[in-house]
Image (cartoon, rainbow, N blue to C red; front, side, top):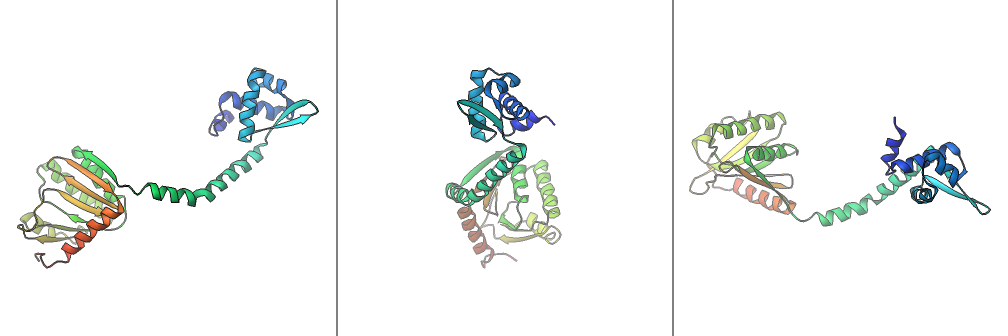
Length: 244
């Protein structure tokens, strides 16, 4: 273990580390002696010493008119860091309150290309709980169809359930036969009431839109938006317009 690398993690640069180590080896000593052992100019030593004192690594002692310096013991350094950590823990509620007030603005993330659509799919699997939304049969290419099939396999493996609303069509009639095996429940609407060439899903505090035709999508991260979209979904899901 390189002690200088360890000290660097605590914002202690190379020359500062040399001064601290020299002071630690010498015990209580005057500036000139510590500077000489550390290999720094005496005038520069005082600048370094001021920072080390501020960081709690060095202490200044006066004996008459002379100034001496002594390094903080390693055990005291541990206690100092623990004290800083305790102060941070006590401040967490206030920091969280600030975070909550500044994070209320919706966040919007854009994705392009097949990899972009795949990133949206990946994000839905990072959250526990049900995924609901409006789906489309419009997978235009074999690659896009494979992307959807691979996603279903990963979703089932993760145990994530889905409720989806789509237009009545042969594709969804066939998909519905696999609902139980694929942890899914599909409901269909007459095509004169609902037709879509995009997917729109709601999960956690997010809403995603995926357009397979243009290979473009977005995620809106906002609780209010997600809550309203979920309410709209439930109203349609429980409406009398669903085709059984």
